[in-house]
Length: 372
Image (cartoon, rainbow, N blue to C red):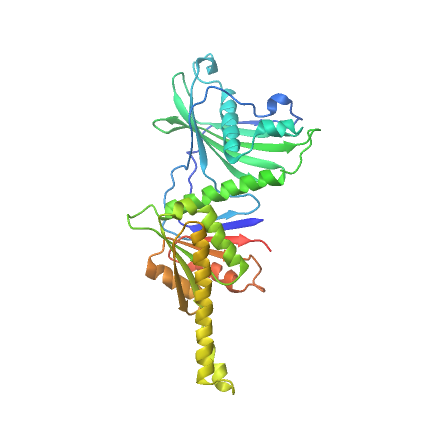
């Protein structure tokens, strides 16, 4: 399973906390009207993020493991209808559940998950828990927006967050959290189908990566620079392809630097042995340089396959230190590096390099993990 880590100063702040709350729990087997039905009088869809301030620290991290992560918000606009009001002239509390339901359905369709298609298989996607915190009322004629995202997943469940704001003044109206569960024909929880889980993970990782990159490059008018640090490992090559596939539209207008650092040849040992001739040492250095250039040319060709023109750069030195120095020297806005995710005992180049860069690089670091 793909695991992605991002270290950056970028954070998402939720809406203002509410002062009153109401919680609804639905734990019985659902009937057909629990299947997230469509609604009709809704208007505009667009994907965006909530306000994203930048903090000074570069050590904040976002972890996308087993479906957990920070994704973009889908924004769905509504207007209040007269039949949604109660006797006091405000929207009935129960109606807000419908707003949240409709926005969830739109988000799932955005991901490529059609609820009706799932129902035709005999399975069901049902709301199992809904927690609502009311902040302010809505009245007739009010226009508002529901911003919804997937906040987490488990084997059989998907967890959503909803924020409702009045527009155009962005007054907070409501916060809600919902749990949706996959059910079989007997209304028993089942594991989310692999193809559905794959769509969810791809959607989350794409929006999260673009969101972080935009946050990292939002200041200044200079052309942005992205560095992908590589070595010969499959994990490194995977990280490069992941970045090209996931961030292609974002980095298309950026300068892309493919960087590899080679540890210096240990000539002390060679001089101390009978093999340490000057010719041999020279040959070893030339072979090492050729291997680095071949690696860079291969990576640049991979970039070209995705329509990205990249610059190659190689240096001699401790890879983790050399990468951080190059970031500062080249004014890099985002570093992408691979990692195999092994423990400290078996950690080799990528493990130690990624850990070091997360803590020392002068830019956000996106670590792409490929499970063994």
